[in-house]
Image: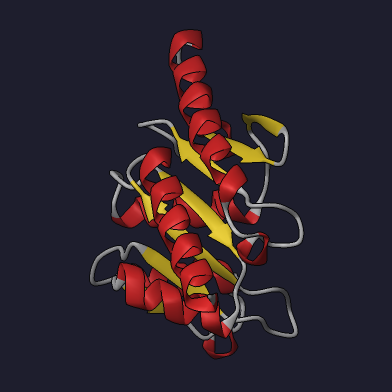
Length: 170
């Protein structure tokens, strides 16, 4: 990929990530919101840019990268993803707001297969939803993965969920 294309990916990701400065702290996972954007031909972590906190770059091995790579096997047009905190009320608001939400149960995964890969793939067989949620387990924290064709779509969905949660709390 050309340096110009990489710069465009990074710029678009940083711009969308910057929009998330106004979200409710309640939906932010303890390590900040991981936000990813894949190049059109991404086949591994080298083709996916990550923004988390103040850092941004290509080739980082994070769960959000594996989520996005699995999703792209089912729908290559889905090039961006971010993860917000999993809580029942956040999930409920996400379902009410976005509606195209699938939840997988990590306890049901087959032995010898990555829980995340299996879970993401299991809900994408009939089409990739706009949101995939995984409850917390003894193996790790849960997450609500917001998906889109570009980072601006993903950021806007997160902002809508955040505003809806804040409005419901008034």
